[in-house]
Image (cartoon, rainbow over all chains, first blue to last red; front, side, top):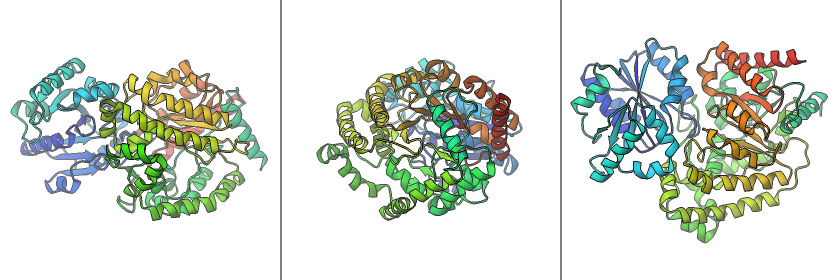
Length: 200
Length: 379
């Protein structure tokens, strides 16, 4: 089972990116499930997501600090036992860290579990957020396999360039993809996320 | 007070006082675990106040090898958390399916304009007007009335069954950072720290005036019991917040509150979720052997022992994720390592934060079995 975890601060655009990835995967003939923490942050209505034809499961986790890692493995195990999707897109809480999630999944009883993480960065706010939430955002970027700079359509050019520089500094392992998440993913990003590549 | 209760109370007090003890005490922290373990639902736990009280005690009896609990449950957890954390809380059986955990809704409820309201009217007056935005006042009132009527009975029940409740004092002061972040949401509040720091600071001072007055009004703690008071710190955890903001907006207030509580004889239970590794040395600024560090599996216990392990006892810290997804042997290994790290000094053994709703029973039992083996070997 391929698992794609979207790591990014609250309001960074994770849900919108998740839906675009789901649409692209579905168009490529893949069975897709989404695991989201809808109520922990304002997000897309789960019923809307279900109407789009995706299998969606909700993670509920008490307080915001509980980044839902204890619930994730059982949710994946349930999917592996029932609908067996080709791809599971996980949108954990905005303070979840990829390394923490990876460690939490080491006991998951899911055959062929292969996790990758995508850092979702808000072009408009990342500059300010890096001044405050430095430790968290640094960890989210440092452990990402791929980075996406969102909201390029509403951010200014200097903001987007600054966001790319920040990603370059903290996630040197990947070149960021700059996107307007309301638009379908372009070919290069689709390939990086879904296609055959050495990273997956 | 039975001999068993007296022995356990003495053991836990000496552990908090950082003495080397003859056995490591075992503490139940599993508010969310208890209902399912006893065949009930979380919805019933959240909405049936008497059941919420009884089910934890029954779970402790059934598990066995337990000396006490971090808190005594009872009442309706949703309204209580909303009143404490100033956020809406979605509750199973009402907004959520029957057997899921409750969920704090991370959304802006307090607006930026409300800062000026606090400055003008004061914090308590603001909260009085604010609370209807996050909680049904009728439910909250009923909950507090029930807890007032039944608090003594609840405490007595624990004593009669031989269990020590650690967080047994009535007050749970909320640090200003946690209150404002809960009300504003992380998204908004973290940017407030950057964009309007002086205003945030001014509001924090107003909040602290009330918090410190409430602590001052507390009677000195003379027992019986531990006198534990919950002091929360997770939104302002060092794992989230840059050092200069932690230094300015979080730590000084926690120090002031904790020192005032200790001066009155209370035992602050520092419920510090998230990653506190960077600032563990700060714990040495607090009165030694008078507080309890209560993490959630994200802080390194090795680093805690090295840096602050002589300053205070630790309540925990078998991680939730290990209890819910690990194997019994992985849990056993972790438990043995934790016991080896602490020895018989400064450890109040428990699951980290709160045992999760989906903790595997075989893992919880294995954890307690390893603790028992450790204690019996030492004896």
